[in-house]
Length: 454
View 1 (cartoon, rainbow, N blue to C red):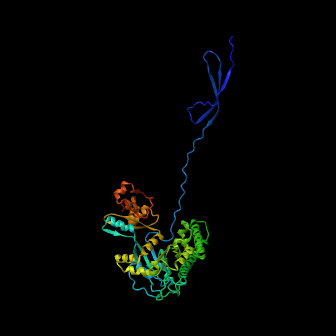
View 2 (tube, rainbow, N blue to C red):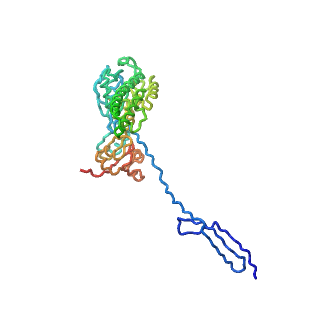
View 3 (spheres, rainbow, N blue to C red):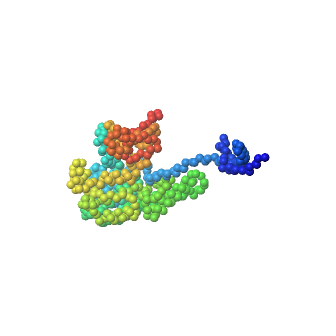
């Protein structure tokens, strides 16, 4: 009888059979019996399912939530047709500046306080090298530059907030404008009297800032009393909630003013701005400070008061632009032809400060420009920073905003670099933009809009 060889057992725990269902995976234990024999080896495998797992469904990765960016709403009146007032103490050169900047004549500004009573108004062409280049490039039949509206406002005096001088009328005129050219005198001239007796621009800046804030405190206190009367009724309605939010904002504004700070320097949320804007506060308006120097000091770029003024602005109105100017020089240039003025500036080795003043004010007002171009017309349009394409189209014509389809866009800088539209198109620099496109300063636009409904 042949000797039976010993039984050898193998365990295959790593072998996993393939199943048709991917939803289940079975881990099996295998055993096999193998006889050592010269005859062909018979290999028997038996298995039993030990455990079954249901595979967890794969979780879909959700895209990260887009965080809504808070849109910064500017203080002041919305829109692009904004006005600037020339403000300062009496006899600091405001009316002379107005004549120079607007190239119009008010007669000789008188050498006494309150020579200006009712504000004078004029529209100033915005100097812009981009517009000039486009006009030269297209040689159109018609050209329309951008404008800035400027008012010459009566001189302020100490106590204006309580009605001194032309106080109440003066301050109401400032409320009607959207930004302030603040003129301070830094020149000595015995023939031009100063209402405070001597030239001291820091004192003058303190007077202007204090008078505007005091009037704002008066406005704000009246608004707060009216709101308190409403919220005293109580209740949980949506209207009451809004009134309480408005009251909280007005209280915050009042505290800031009482602390000697201007409203425009506050960090306001969009909701707070909505509550502040209807108050038309004087200290909420953007300010560009024009430092009126003698012609001699302006040309040599030196004046003993300039460092003190820079320090005052840094402390009391950080970020406000300061522009040295000689109203005396600008007055002379205003009566010359363009060629004569250019020759005079070349001789003096200096430049006019007016273009910089106007451009700086537009920036302070958050105004920008886009252009429409062609051989028929080149026009510069004024918009607020952050304006989207449909609203920019609406500046051209109200119906274009309602029926806006798309805008064909390229930037002035690209056109200047490449030389013509054909090259821009070949290089892919002409873009088609939709309703969410934010128009950039210097864009050239071609608006496509549908037919207006009758």
